[in-house]
Image (tube, rainbow, N blue to C red; front, top):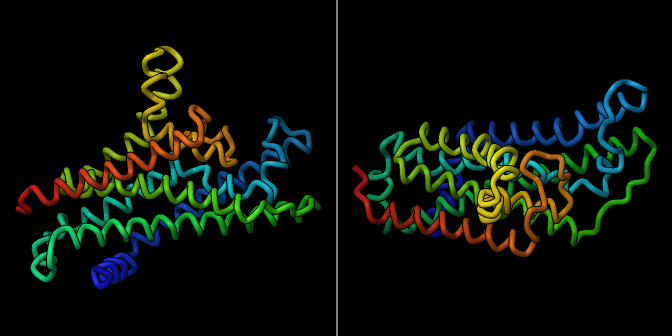
Length: 274
């Protein structure tokens, strides 16, 4: 098993797309969690139009929440693309049979891919935490504010929640890739759901229809947003809102992760690879 995991990790490490997704996630987080809000704060402080986001939300005490705020939508979309590439690349290059000829079972290869997705999600979350911590420290220094770093337990909880959410989205990407046996279509459908459908449900349908509002509380995006909101993510961030409690949100997200993984594994095992 570990030989297969090492091989899969090495394969993804040599793919420029994997590092590009990581870089995009870091840039988006630094830009929209720190640079843009700080520019708005400075504009408001100098009398320019716009209220700006409060300085307290950009200081080190809130860095963990800012780091994981994008995981329900934008960072989650990057994780989904990574999951599609990990599983769908074998269909795009027609290499499933070549891989399986050298391996003991489909389950072993598939498990190695899931581990790779989880490791990639962890690296992404750790990078976001590091960038958020650095950016918040710079802002605190520029504004002559005290550090006030959160406790290690709070940071670990935030990191765990971010990892759970990003791994769930990455596993959804694996499921879409296995179900549709391709790369382009799974990426397109996954992005439509993450960036359009779930936001339309939250912003338009849920306020008008009670049954949509109730249904939304069982969807992966809403529970991901509730989980990170409970751990300090700013509620003004797209997809972040405390619709359900943190305990329910964590269980639902974990349930979706397990369900996506099991369904994709069953499809891979039950169908021919032609």
